[in-house]
Structures are given as C-alpha cells and as structure tokens.
Image (cartoon, rainbow, N blue to C red; front, side):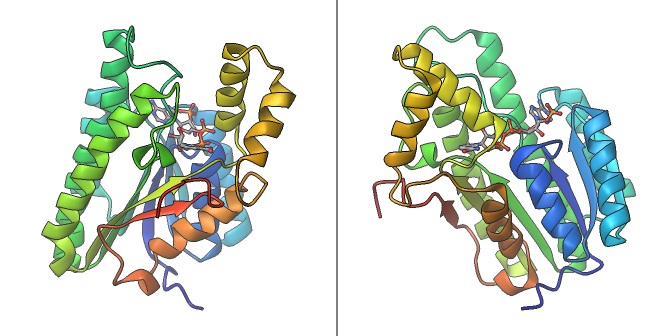
Length: 261
Ligand SMILES: NC(=O)c1ccc[n+]([C@@H]2O[C@H](COP(=O)([O-])OP(=O)(O)OC[C@H]3O[C@@H](n4cnc5c(N)ncnc54)[C@H](OP(=O)(O)O)[C@@H]3O)[C@@H](O)[C@H]2O)c1
C-alpha cells in the first residue's frame, strides 16, 4: 500500500526515544521529511543523522521543552512563518505516577503545559498552513487511561482527557479543509516509560519488578507488551493519505487491554 507520504514534511515531538523515535523512523522509511523534537539535542541529532543517512530524507533536529510555554511559542512561530508542516505528531513525556490527591501545583502545571497547552498551541499553528494547502494530519499520542483511568496515574488520566475534548472539537472544525485530527492510545508498549511505571507500581505494592511485569503481561489479552514498531505502524497509517476518512477518532493500540468496547 502506498501511504502517500513521500516528500511530505512532519514535525514529530517527543522523538528522542521510545514511541516518538519509532514514529519518526517509520515516517522517514516512507520518504517523509522530518523535524524531530525533544529536550535532549544529542539524541535527536543522532536520530536525524541516522534517518537522513538511511532513508535519504531531509531530517532535522529541533530541541524543545514542551513544558516551557515560551519555547512552545517560538516553535509555533517557526511553524507559522518558516516551516511547511503537513503532519504534526503531538507527543511528550508522561507525568510522574501519583494518586489524585497531594500532587504539587508544579507537577499539575508542567503536565498541563507539556501535554495540553502545547497540543493546543502547536495544533493551532499547524492548522493555518494545512488549511491553505488543503491537506494535513494532526495526531496526538495519549494513553489508554483516557478510556479506562489507570490506577496511580492521576495526572496523566486527568490532563490527557482534556486533550480528547480539544481533539474532537478541532477535528469537527477542520475536516472540510482536508485535515484529520486523531488520537492514538498506547496500552502497554515496551519502552523506558513502561519500565519506570512498572518499577514505581512494583515498589508501591511491595513486589519485585519482575513479578509485577509478569502480572502486567498476563493481564493483557495478547499476553505480551506491544513493540514500538507495532505502535508506530498504526500511527503512521493514521497520518497517511490512505487514512483520509478517519477523523475525530481515538484509536487503541493495546493488545486488548482496555476492558470496554
Ligand atoms: N509506553 C507505554 O506503554 C505508554 C502507555 C501509555 C501512555 N504512554 C505515553 O505515550 C507517550 C510516549 O511514550 P513512550 O513510552 O515513548 O515514553 P518515553 O520513553 O518516556 O519517551 C518520551 C519522549 O518524550 C520526550 N519528552 C519528555 N518530556 C518532554 C518535554 N517536556 N518536552 C519535550 N519532549 C519531552 C522525551 O525526550 P527528552 O527527555 O529528550 O525530552 C522522550 O523522547 C508518553 O506521554 C507516555 O506517557 C506510553
């Protein structure tokens, strides 16, 4: 299947490792030029070099801290005035584990900024050029917690649910302009984030990391964690020309772990 991504230009955030890095890799494999963004410049620079070399695309690194509103504003300026972005992948780090009470204002505010406000402002900036060109894809990586809240991830469950409301509303406003806006939900994808969540939960429940991981794995209908490749292939399909009639949707990549239809 030709995904129609050859020569398009994507901005892929949270791409120094894990899910975001693999999405950038699969986009580049399809011939898409990419800006890769995250805080660690050394990581995104080596990813950009690898993608340019391996797939012969124009890949550039853009260091960004999505929890810093001023940096996000500067990135919005780049999108509005300098870059031509056909595809925006909103993605950032997950908030630290916590229950619903006793979370500091600092954690709430930085999570609201990096996961919600950055998605709002960057999507708004991207939509302008996409409308002029009559084509665009905005995809946001969230979590299964927006459907089935995950214990001990109160900040993630809460803040990401607001992103669902924004995404659905925006999708209705821009569908007629050839722009799709969707969300993709990881269940349990094998990354450093999953390992750190499992370690925190194991500690909290007085279990070893290995015991907790085995229990976690066996509670998934597929009986295994997902790979970043399995996740990225779906995400890239949603950003492709082929997915032109999917918008305002929340797509699960979860091996069946979410227990609702
Ligand atoms: N893996 C799973 O099973 C799973 C399940 C549910 C939800 N999720 C969510 O899906 C997203 C991606 O997951 P993942 O497993 O790939 O996470 P990850 O391994 O922790 O990677 C997160 C990426 O986001 C970047 N990042 C973190 N904070 C940032 C900030 N303030 N500004 C810019 N970039 C930032 C990190 O790079 P730098 O440190 O270089 O900035 C990194 O590239 C996360 O939000 C995660 O919580 C994952």
